[in-house]
Length: 130
Image (cartoon, rainbow, N blue to C red; front, side, top):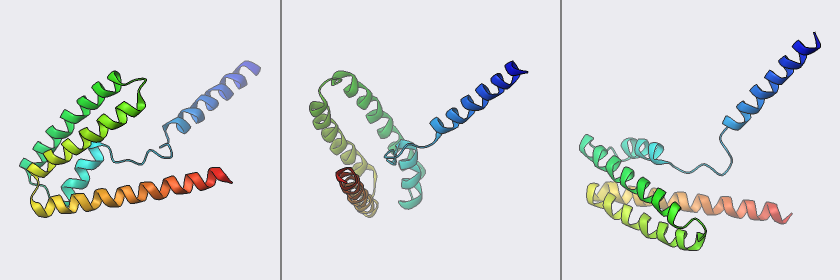
């Protein structure tokens, strides 16, 4: 009986810890490639051709990002600089695919996201000071 109770308790503990690990982590609210393309399809009204091209661009830069992380494992500052350059290149590639109106809406969305991210950093900083 004790063994059965222990096994059941262990099972419940593993189940609860697994569920906890599966929860979204705070600060991981960024827009990954999947969420980004969905947002772009909805908010920018991408054509099917644009959707294919944007997806190809995202795949290209996702692989470049993996390569960068390997190259700059111990040099976070160097990696950050390269990632910023890569982001700018990706946005130029987007601009070549999007209409002017779509591109302007995309840029405004990016600015809003940066503003929100900065607010979150300020809140975290002020909380850590308390």
